[in-house]
Structures are given as structure tokens and as C-alpha cells.
Amino acid sequence: MFSLQTIFGQGKQFYSLLNDAAVAAHDSTLALHEMLKSPERTPGLEAFKLARQREREASDKISQALVDSFITPIEREDIESLASALYKIPKQVERFADRYALARHRLAGIDFAPRAAMLEQAAGVVVQMVKELPHLRLEPMKELNDRLRVLEAEADRLILELHREIYSGRLDASEMFLLKEFFEILEKAIDRCREAGVVAYSIALKNS
Image (cartoon, rainbow, N blue to C red; front, side, top):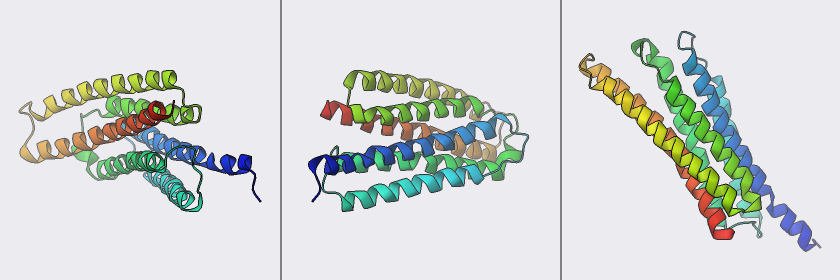
């Protein structure tokens, strides 16, 4: 017969799996920033596929653990919501990378690296928030959530500057469409980080 301590200890695996998912998401943003810092290099996509695979594996393990476990450290719906939010980050990042590898010859002079740096920082804050979850301390989570909001606002400002390039009059219709697509994907990736942070913060708020 399992002791209560053993049962509750098993429930802690969810924090580890969520952390694995957050780290995989962050690694995908690191890879994107590195790629965009050196646009002259031929982009390699292996790092994005690997991060996405790790994210998928963590997500699958979380889903299976929810089926197998009758004790969870936080509500099942919250675990599912956070896992889903984390899953969407590398998905958007890989989408950007795949398209960039195909179209970079048409993006000369467009510097995405500063925006990718903001995305990397935002994903890094999400990792910190997920690591903080087991403690369920409201004040540290609030500070991290506030930092994520500041990063989101700064990223929005930088993306707005990129939109000025679209409406500068120097681009033809096809170039405008292409740039708009890239801006929207990058913006969605940052939004996904914000969404994950909101879920993590709401969990701490509910359980603190």
C-alpha cells in the first residue's frame, strides 16, 4: 500500500514535466535569436525540430500522467492549460524559422534580431515562472508577471517599428504581404509567452 507521502510525491512530477516543456520552449527562442543574429548564414532547422519534439514529448507525458494520477499538486485544468500554452510557443517559433529559411533572400535589410531577443527574454521569464510554481508564492510570481508584461509592451513597440517598414512606400505588394506575415508570426510567439505567464500567475494567485 502506498503511503500518503508517496502519493503526494508522485504528484510533484507535474512540476518537473511542466519545467521540461518551458525549457524546451525557451530553447526554441534561443535558436531563433541565434539564427536571426547571423542572417548571412544558411539557417539550420534541426534545433527547432528538436525543441518542438522535446515539447511534444513533455506534453504527451503530462497528458498520460493526468490519466494515471488521481492526485495532482494543482488542479488538473490548470495543468492542462499551462501545458497547452507552453506547447504553442515552439510551434510558432518553428513556423517562423521554416518560413524564414525559405524566404530570407527576400528579407535583406530587415533586422528581426532585436525582436527575437525580446521573445527569448519573455520565454526565459516563463521558465522562471514555471520553476517558481511549486512554491506557490504570490509576490515572486507577481514580479515575474510584471516583468513579462513590460517585455510584451517593449516587443509590441519594436514590432510597430517594423510595421513602418511595410508602409514606407519602398516595398511592392508581394514584399508587404511577406513582411506582414513574418511580423504576425513573431507577434503571436510573444503573445504565446504572455499567455503561458498569465496561466502560471493565475495558478499562483489561486493557490497562494
